[in-house]
Image (cartoon, rainbow, N blue to C red; front, side, top):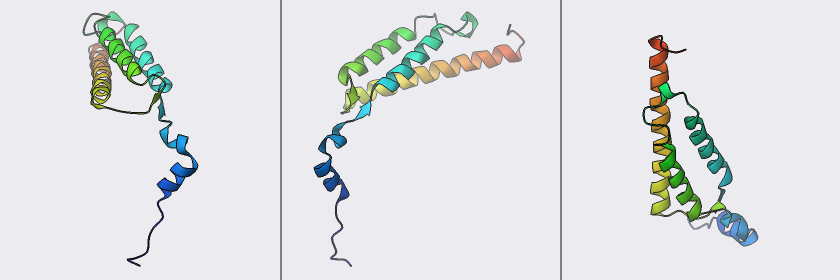
Length: 114
């Protein structure tokens, strides 16, 4: 059993479907989800914002544009720049959502919600 070779299914798949391996992840769903998060932040009531309205969406849009510029149609390659930018964008959106949620819960608990 030790001398038995196991066929490499990946090599066979690449031989049969060479373009399938290189297609990459579609960019459009991630871009639409990010734009939805930015737009939802823009329409939040003022009492749920912790910074002025356009302070967070501006950098988020710049990060999104730079990510799309690296791989416009499909996510076919990833380098250090795109990884850092994408993690920064996710962290920025996540932190802003968490802080806004905290402000909403605080307003509800203290009966300031209208």
